[in-house]
Structure formats: structure tokens, C-alpha cells
Image 1 (cartoon, rainbow, N blue to C red):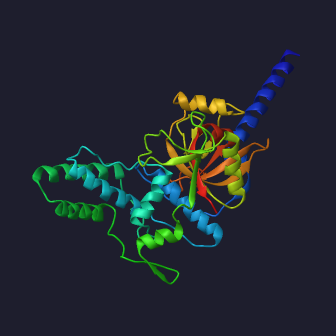
Image 2: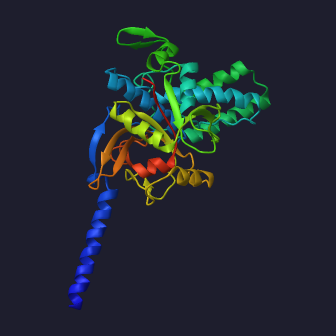
Image 3: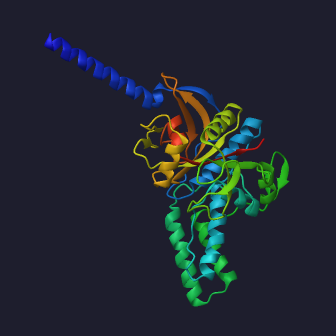
Length: 340
């Protein structure tokens, strides 16, 4: 009798273990909706996830409309480094090169510098942008001390970027038989004011545009602040209607395993209060950005959002990550989507 009880308990434990595994394994998830995407890219050793995620969102938005658009992150990175190199030079190194940012900053960069198709300016096969950043800063400080003129310094920077990232593409962009300047091309794929950015925090009033107090919000952008349930419904509705969602949030939790392609949260039934407390106690931080392109469910009917990551196709589930509904509710800093 005692042995029977022990065997019964072991069986229950094993079943519980299998059931728990099914809720945290992407293999047990059934896809409900999945939007079109361009191939997964790799940001390499850099802090440019916000660039890759926002460009991916713009790409999917066009793919779902029937347009073929694949944009170059390397072009945006180069423009940022070139711009900040000049500031570093003029400040004699007091303003270091910084490649961090948030979603709206990518929109500003597109309007300022334009865009290039991926085929015109592809990501280098092997590059460490953090090392390149230090090389640029060193050249800026040496040039400032030597009294080299700004025009000569910019020539040196462009030569360095040509060698490290690749030579700049032609002055014009050719797409579908039409000719564009990079700025005209950028406007054709992302019209000014097309994207809305949203958040949900109670230390600001709801239904107003508020400035998020994030270290990476260098351009002081505002986000439309709404209640948590409104934000979550917006994410679901947008994806179900065929629109991708730019996502920015916390990936520092031990239960967020990007390399395995799954992110869950032990805590359930996330409320506005729980979310706010996690943010105020710095348990929710702005770590990473991805593109949300789908919805899946497990055997219990619990929802997961499918995210396109920028760590290359060998990471996660062929480059994608499944984030549980509760994880998104608790750990989201901001989202962005087309107003169309």
C-alpha cells in the first residue's frame, strides 16, 4: 500500500512536470496569427536593437500591404556614428559616441538622413560596433588635440567607416523602377507622423502624451499614456488586423530566455498596480527592443506574443521569441505601431 502511494505521488509529480514544461516550451504552442517578415538580421555586438526592431516593424507593415521592403540597419548605424563623431571631436571627447536609443529616435533619424534598402548596404559579416565606437572616440580626441580641421577629421571618419562597415551606396535609391534620394525613399516607407508610440504608467495622467523618464530617451519623445488593459488590447488588435507592433521592454528576468526563444513570468494576473510597482522599484528596466508579429496559445489557452528578434536566425526559435501575455503586461516599457 505504501509503495502504491509513493508511485502515485511520483506519477502526479511527473505529470505536473510535463504540464509545466508544455506551458513554457514553444513546441507546445499553437500559432493563431503570424504576420509576414523579412529575414532575421543580427545586430552583433552592439546596442542597436531599437534600430533593428523599428526597421523590422516598418518592413512588416509594408509586406502586409503587399510592398516588398527590406531596410538597412547598417546605414542608420553609420549615420549615427558619423554624426556623433563630430560632436565627440568638437567636445574633445566630452561627448562620447552613443548608439543607444528608443523607437521614436529611429523615426527622427530616418527623417534626417533617409534610408537605404538592405541590398544596397548590408550588415557587415563580422563587426563589433562597440570596438568601432571606441576607435571613433580615440580618433576624435587625437584629432582635437592635434588641431586637425573638422573637414579633415570628417574625411578620416568616413574612411574608417568605409573600411569597417563598407563603402556608402550610390547617391540614389532605385526601387520598382523609381529613383529616390535616401530621404525621399525614407518618406516613401515611413511618412512623417505615421507611427504612434504608447505606454502605460500611473505616475502620469492617462490619455495624454507624456515624456518617459528613460535614460535612452535622448530626444525627449512623448508617448501616449493609457491604462494597461487598453495597451494590451491595442497590441492584440493591431496584430490581428495585420499590423506589427514595435516592442521595448525588460529582458533581464531569469525567466526571459531569449536564446531558447521563450519568456514567461511566474506571477499571473498582472494589474496596473503590480506593473507600476515593478517599474518604480527598478525591477522593470528598458533593456531590449523587438518586433511583435504574431499570437500563439498553449494547451491551457494562455496567450503568447511572437517576437522577431535581432540576434540572428541561430538564436531563439530560428530568430524568434515567444513572450507570455503576463510577461508583456508586466515588462513592457513602450510600444509603437502605424496609425493606418
